[in-house]
Every structure is written in structure tokens, then in C-alpha cells.
Image (cartoon, rainbow, N blue to C red; front, side, top):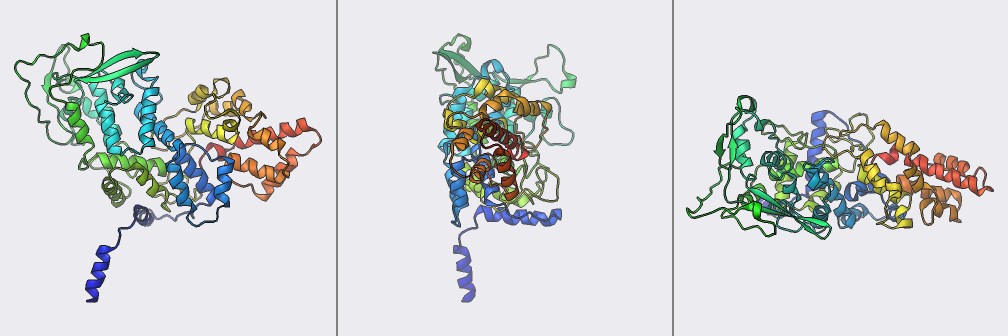
Length: 529
């Protein structure tokens, strides 16, 4: 009887939250890697890290003060829930995925460099927490206003689009199979051109409405990709043989024959949307196959990339190369993440919440190892802020957003300049190499000095006008820039420096601005720590 009661209790018990599974499997990895975990990060470190990872910027002084003064036990979970619904979160996710999809140097730049409509569309998807499968399906179908840009990037280049779709959404590299069968992998050239067959019929229509270019994606009912064999055997003028579309590592597409009386419209003469509907849509079949719960690639590729976004490296590393024989660092964890992601209907917010609330994510970054992104996740990754994060953090830290407004432009075209200086795409591999150009900008750039210089409502102006004791003002300075309270020694030295000639307001102002400049130039500000 006792056994039956115990069995019933086990069967009815709720499954452990994913964060518990994460912590269990990561802890098992410590034994495999023979490493010791770091302690949990303090509140200030968690605050800065979670803000940067979830919203792409640092907290304001007021936000930091509220969180650090809160003594409630569950305040970290409450913070994460709030940030996941913050409009900054949607914008940050848009920026991350826009970079993944287009990089800093997108294909077909004449059409894709200005893609505000796509960015706005993508941001709205994240703001609504559209499930990942639905979002990708929308992007491939390209039927909503603003969603067409992915196909526009690869117009008339089905082979390039095959490489991109397989890498980004399936975590699979097909570049080699484009030219030859890989000697050590099962995927062949015919597999590659079978996937390319889904894109060969796509058409792009460009219209101008007002000052904007509007794109529509059409699909022909005929046309095949031609296979000429290995690149080494290519013969000039040889057309090759048509290859029927085939799902990656799966079955060939079951496509009906065109009616004998069918006549393909002349798409070159179509100047206005909509395009005629195809007799049979390969695009629809591809969108359904890619995002299907049973797809062996889709969910695993997604969770591996999201995991890398927050933990610094994928369970399969690099994130976009999930080969059949790739050995994850934590196989059971990757399986659990993919399984639960599908079970929770591809809910990205849920997945991010479970990762961020795990103890594995909340570890301190200090430890004996030197890797920026430890393989065994025994401590938190250390990463530089992206260009977008760095600009946003500067605006918040210096009070520019308060003084000038959220939509105000950075001084002296600093925004585009900083994207050029600090703009390295997120590659999921933890690569970073600061260059002389960064140091020159931070040390000598007029743009940064302009942000720091006391102006009505900004940080320097607020601190100068405050009637609080200078030790409290220095605390505010540290919280505003580094998201932490200074140590006693730091506070004492900075107060002494700023107030050395307290009767000379010009000197006090200059020294305060120099202090802000020093903190913004520190590695503590440049990195997430």
C-alpha cells in the first residue's frame, strides 16, 4: 500500500522547472571537467548582467536603487519578469537577430542596408512574444508588411539563401556541400541543391510608396535549380540537370504536376503587388517543415543559440554547426532544452526566463580560469558590450536620455560613428579583440566628451546641483555608470579628488566630468562583468 501511495505521489508531482534541470546537468559537467564553480553573483552584478542581456542597456540610477534597496527574497524573479515585458527587451532581441540575419555587411546592400520596415516588424514580433516557430514561419512566408527583407537579401541567389537558412534556423553548415560532397559528412551536393530548389522560384517586387521602398515576395509555379556536379568538374556552358526539392536529410517534396494548359505569367512585366499565387507553393511547404516540432534541427538549433546568447557559448560550439556527429558539452541538457521548448510551444520568453533564473546563469564571473566563456559554465561569461548596447548604456549612464529624451540623436552623428568603431556582430563564439580605434574614441573622442559635459538634466548637471553630501553623490555616480556602490576607499579618494578645490566651481565641475570619463573608460563599463 505504501508503495502505491508513493507511486501515485510521484506520478502526480509536478515536473521540475527547467532551471532545476539546467543546474543539475551543469553541475554534472563540473565533475566531467574537474572544475570548481564560482559563488553566486551579488545583487549588483546580477542586476547589471540581466539588464544588459535582457534589455541591451544598463539600469538607470532609479532602477538600480529600487532593486538594491529591495529586501524581498524573490526580487530577482520579479525583475526578470518585468524586463521580459519591457519594450527595451523587444528592441534588444530585434537588434540581436537583425545582426544574426544580416550581419554588419548584409548581402545586396543596395536593397537591405535600409531596412527599418523589417526591423519594426521584427521588434513587434518580440514585443508580442510571438512563438519562435510562428515567427520563423512568418519570415519565410513573407506575407506580412515589412517581413520580406530576408528573401530580398538573397534575390535571384537561391544557393546563398540555402546556406543562410540552414545556418541560421537549422544550425547546419551547407557551404561545403555547395561545391562538393563532404568526405567526412553524410550531406551531399544533391542535398544542398535539393534545399536550394525551395528558393529558386522566389521573385522580389520593389515598389516605392512615398519615401519608402516596399517589397513583395512572389513565387513562380515552374523553374528548377540546375545541378552541374562538383565544382572541380564544371564545364563552361553546361546547364546541368534539374534537381527536385528535398528536405534536408529527409524526403523529397511531393509536388503535383502542372496542368498541361498552365502558362506561367511573365513576372518581369508585373510592376504592382500582389503577385499571382503559384499553382503549388514550395515556400509554404518549406516553412511548415522547418518549424515542425518533429524537425530534427529546428528546436535544437534555436535553444543552442539562445543558450549561447546568455551563457557565452553553445552546448554545441560554434552555435551554427550542429553536425550529426557533434558532441554537445552537456548532451542531456541540450535534449531537455529542445524537448521543453517544443512542449512550451516555442515560447522564447519562457526559455529565457528559465535560463536567467538558473543558478548556472547567476554565477559570479570571478574564478581561476581564463576563458571568456567557460566550456563547463562554472562561472559566468565575461563579454564586451555590443555597439548597440554600448551606445544605449552611455545614454543611460550619462543621463542623456533624461536630459535629451529617448528619441534624441547622439551628438555629432555619434551613433553611426560608434556603430562603425564598435560594430562587431554577435557570432556566438565569444570572440573579441579591442583595437586602437576603440581606445582612440574613448580617450580622445569629442562625442563621449559631449555626453559627459554638464548639460541641463544629465548626470554631471544633476550631481553638481545636488545638495546631498559628496559621498552620497559619488555613490550615485557609481550606480549610474557601473551599477554598483563604490568601496569605502573608492568613495574616499573620489570625494577628495572632486572637492579638492570646492570653492572653485569650475574646478569641481572639471574634476567631476573627469571622474565620469574615467569610469566610462574602465573595463567595468566596457564589459558586462
